[in-house]
Image (cartoon, rainbow, N blue to C red; front, side, top):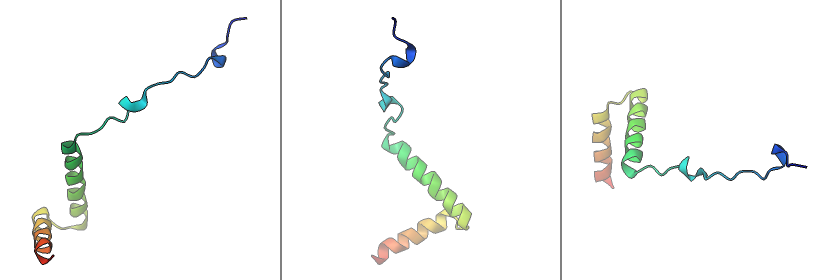
Length: 60
């Protein structure tokens, strides 16, 4: 008797191609975009945030 479809062993698919590694530039770009979105939401302009971050860096 021939094997039916549901008795066949499951086909293994290489899933690595779905979760491809992003290069660092793409990751940084996303981070920057998300940070700016957040700053827009809370109402701080980007240049002010940069100034604040620079000031905080000096305080350390």
